[in-house]
Every structure is written in C-alpha cells, then in structure tokens.
Image 1 (cartoon, protein in one colour):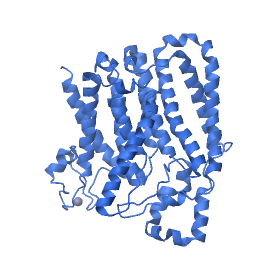
Image 2 (spheres, helix red, strand yellow; image 1 turned 180 degrees about the vertical axis):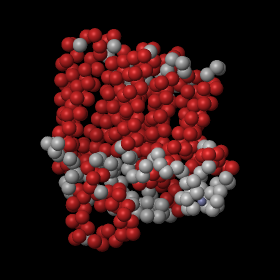
Image 3 (tube, rainbow, N blue to C red; image 1 turned 90 degrees about the vertical axis):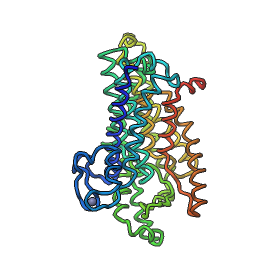
Image 4 (cartoon, rainbow, N blue to C red; image 1 turned 135 degrees about the vertical axis):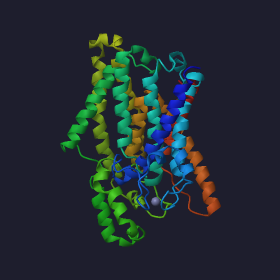
Length: 418
Ligand SMILES: [Zn+2]
C-alpha cells in the first residue's frame, strides 16, 4: 500500500509527541511552563543534547542513565514515547485496513480523511497525558481537554469547508441538531459569563474555608500530611477547586512516598448536596439554549447544504453529550450519596472525547468505563494481596481513556447496540 510510508511517519510523529507528553506529565501538574526551559537532568541539571532527545532510542543509547552524573532516568520516558508512537500507528492501520470502525474511513482512505485523523491521534495523546497525571495527582489539568476541544472546533469545520468530502468520516448531525447545538453553546457561554460576573454562584466556593476550620479544630486529622503542606497548597487551593481542577475526592493511599492532599477529607465536606443545586442551576442555561435552538430549526432550512456548519454542530453536540453524561451522573450521584461523585475534570475529558468522536460515542465510553474500573480493581486487589499493602483507589480518568480506545478501535461493534 502506497500509504505505508505515511504511517511510519505518523508513528515517528507519535513518538515525538510522546516525548512532549513526558514534559507535560511532569510539569503541567506543578504549574511549570511546558515550553521552557529545555529538558534537563533533574539531578545535575545537564541539558540534553540534540540526539539525546530522540524518542525511545536515546534512552537505550544512554543505558537509561544521565550522560554526566549517571543518575538513572525513569523507564517511563521511553515507555510513554513508545506507547504513543505505537497507538498513533495503530489508528491508520485499524481505520483504513479493517472494518472494526466506521467503514467510511476505509472508503475515504488517508487522502480523504487525514485532517480528521490528525485530531483523532491527538485525542489519544491527550488521553495518555490525562491518564498519567490523573494516576499521580488525582487531577486532570483542564488545559488538556481544552486543547483537544479547540482542535476539533477549528480543524473539523475548516477542513470540511475547504473539502466537504472530509465530512464522510464524521457522524454528521441533521440540520435540526445544528440549531440545538448552537443554542446549547450560547447557553453555556451565558452561564460562564454569569459565573464570572458573580451572578451565578461557584459550587464548593467555601470548601477550602471549611477545610481550614476543620484543621483548626481537629489538627490530629492532618498530622500525616504535614510534610507535604506545599503540595496541599498547590493542589487543593481554593482557586483550583473553584476552577474545577480538583477532579475527584478519591481516597488516597499514595504509593509514591508522599500524601498529596488530605483528599479523603473532601469526602467529609457536609454541603455536597446543597452545592449540586448550584451546578444544576448552571446547567439549566445550556438546557434552555438547546430547547430554544430546537424551536429555531425550521427558520434556517439552508443548513442542510452547509456541510461545515453541520460538522461544527456535530462537534458541539458531541461536546455537550460527553459533558452532560458525566455531569448529570455527578449531580445525581452526589445527591444520592452526599459525597462528591465524579470530578469536573472527568466532565471536561468526556466532553473533549465527544467533540472529537461524535455525540453517541461518549455514551458508549461512559457505559464501558466501569468495566475498566472493575478490571483495575481486580488488578489492584491482586497487587495489594501480593504486597500486603492497602488496595489503591485509581481515579476515573484512566477508565475513560481505556474505554475510549476500545470505542475508537472497535466502533463497529457498538453499532449493534444502536
Ligand atoms: Zn545528570
């Protein structure tokens, strides 16, 4: 096949993206720039020479050690680079040479779908970064899903405006879906503006204050965390909570030497049910927008012929679908259990998955993810047995990522379901 040289290039590109992901995984949660300074040995500060940046291979040439001070370099670096390259390579092979996904991909071929393919592989890169950061820090930095949503919002409509044939691999919405999507988008923007203006209340705005109060009254609960107070400040400051960066209040038995935050303390926050009312109020606006959009559809019949606009509508509907599925679960779950269920980081991650893959896919992902949870629970239970340690709670982001890969690579199977 004449496209194979391109596939090799995509794999190499993936390995380079993986190299960048290593930087993202280490620096983003700490609030450091991911652009500067250039990569350096964390032990002796030696900056990497050009060839030492070659993905996967450089690590083996260096024997897994810093060239100057011989400090071992984590195997995670080449592993992430290899994984990213391998998954990037798997996408075109599976999309164009099997019937496991929408067969439109095989018909379109690389030449007829490459801009959409690029966004799909970047989604995979984002899932890898989100998974690694979520496992280590129990957060998903919102910048990761934001970049992917922005990419889909720009690349999909522009590509299909220039060449409508590219739309053959996008699950195009009907023209009625476009006005519903645009209405929902307007509602979402209005809700965010009202939030910034202080007209709509932030949820969990007083959680940090409450936490400090508890700390004053029951300092013994915080004894264990004293050593890592700076981590607490960075990861669990009131600002971060307000911006929705705290993904979930998982109970943490961290195995990497330090307790990040008294995250399990968040589970004791007494006003979770009340706060869900605020979030439901926020969501009312996009819902009203979508209802308004539904009644507008008959006033705009020419949409049917504007492929790029229907593509844009599809991206927005996918975004809303993904976000809504988890946010509604979060609200219902939190009301039912009185504890924060699911994090806003998960909401944004599945929203980004929907923006790239379409409105139905997040629903498949959502129902598939718990099986990964079960698998992880079994594994961690087994590991805990072996090491006689405490079973570790793994955050939800990795399950979503695993389920998304299955949906991307075996989409055809889900057509049986609907
Ligand atoms: Zn060194």
